[in-house]
Image: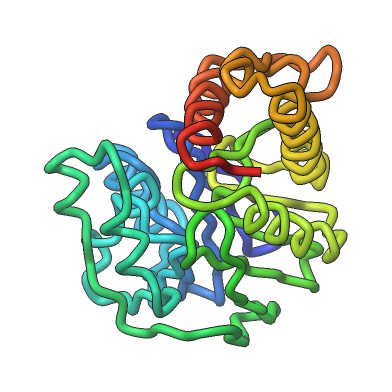
Length: 260
């Protein structure tokens, strides 16, 4: 697992499983953790680094959304208080493709909220706000003093995933993130990013909608399944396999649910 300091007292951890992110914010030797990685091995290593390398204990865990690829460490910090949106359970029960091991990661949050929660932690003020898109319970954490926003999974590099939501909801969520204009963006995977990733998600939705509507206007619904990922992202962008998988699933969802 990789970890590094993003700002003073703020660390990002990138797990080996799915490159899932977790963020740690220190207040002396007391820590606040945001998300909990995707595998038990990564979670154990995370605990070791926090406990031994950083000599800290975790008082709070904030969950951006209750999907199992961000929950592996929750049960390892039994004294910590988990903070989540009040609809967290809807997100957990709606998740597909979950193994029995992943189901065992569930830990009920101690604190739930509806729209906004302000939390002062060390030198930082965390503006935690409901931002449904990827799921109905997704939250974001905006930290003005660090010029940083933590977003959850609304976008994965260059694509969005429509399985649990609608294009309109994801577009609104990405637009809210974009309006903060933070220099540092941490999504659910792949470490530290920038607003370029948010822009990529918005571009993908815009172009995908254009091709879908053209197919319907020409009475060629079946051609939606043939829309190429390369036509929906910035020219010359490197594509990884998981993006192709998400894109193909999106196309089938668009046809099945009559999205856009």
